[in-house]
Amino acid sequence: MELLHTLCKIHSPSGNEGPIKKFLLDYINKNKSTWKQVPEVYADDEELQDCIILKFGNPRTAVFAHVDSIGFTVRYQNQLVPIGGPDAQSGYKLVGEDNFGPIECELEVNKDHQLFYKFGRPITTGTDLTFKCEFDETEEYVTSCYMDNRLGVYNALKLAEDLTDGVIVFSTWEEHGGGSVPFLAKFIYENWKVRQALIADITWVTDGVHPGKGVVVSMRDRNIPRKAFINKILENATDSGIDFQLEVEGSGSSDGRELQTSPYPFDWCFIGAPEENVHSPYEKVHKHDISCMIDMYKYLMKVL
Image (cartoon, rainbow, N blue to C red):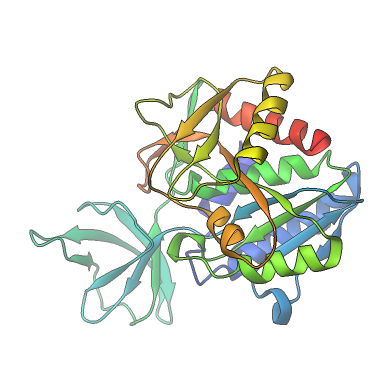
């Protein structure tokens, strides 16, 4: 879990994904020669901004994993504005850096649910802050901020080790409304005619989804993917023998939404481990579900 711990510590809220892009490119360039298939790496700042695309062999399916996290932006005085939908409770530790140096401060929420920081000096307006990483691993669970979606990124990097044919896409802005997937979809469809995708993201533990019972295959959330493709996924998931659970929700969204509304004929399915304490500093995922997620992606990318 050392790699996952490292990913969770990287400060890269929506709109400021440069730090994790740099880490990923360094990691990919260092390790790609040991992978079964050395990928073509696309990471041009002008064309792809802070996104990365890895192309392996003759791809049929793409995996999307968003690299950004929720967080907070400093407004004026000691006010904060949320990035995405963070769980906000007084006492949470926040970190960042401005032109005066490193920051470790405390979140304060008043009775009107307005957000503030407590720190020994003013923080420069526009500075982004994220939860302080307090990574904890037990025999059964991993707990940390930003398991959503650093675990999806971790899954994609483990998939890359054995992938021979496919595309891995590291996208941005997902937690705050999206925006990168349309040009990423255009790139991979027009270059390689790939038109089916798996969304490597993290979902919720609910009354129908339980920790330790396997990876989650989502049949729908706020958006509804094409039933024919979901049935194909479920048939192959059953054949795999890997533990999985079904999810049906009426809210929540992912990079799949932008694929569905793009002008390209993408089929997509959200497949990810479930977590407790969503969007808090203490997101908690069962290790069995992590293993099932990685195994399921490796299996599906061979057969789809």
